[in-house]
Length: 209
Image (tube, rainbow, N blue to C red; front, top):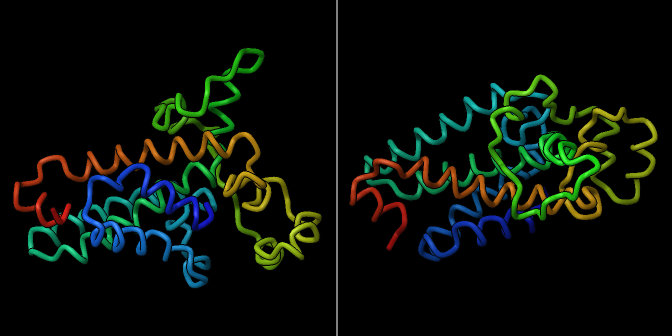
């Protein structure tokens, strides 16, 4: 998703849970995953190229870093690790066909509103039909620039990130709202999973309150 939407997801889901200082550090680490160096050779940052297992390992490694850092009294490193892996979980809904698979279930029926999307349907998470966009360079690189976007799409296959992504309302259409709501819900789920079992001191450090 584009930076502005990652920020919106973070503030909507976690804004009232953390101090302003902690929220700033977590959000910065989150959006920093989209820096140019993070776009090359880091499928795990964005759930790209069908790198599902690689990304799940990355997420759990970063979650473990959150816990070990808090145990050592290092809140800043914990915030950074938390923000990084939340970026991956949020991009899952914009860079894979999960939302398409979910909405397709209602073919011929009234589609539930976006807030009712299920972000963790196990039959879809584990579906053999689940895919994420492949990154085809150099034409994929041209997609990131508005002036060359149409040109790049003429040469990119339909399973590319460029064609599959729901990164903004312009690119995702009505599915973008479902991707946003799923990402917001998933962020809360990941917060609850990460903080489960925290000691009182770990909670104090993490929330910075």
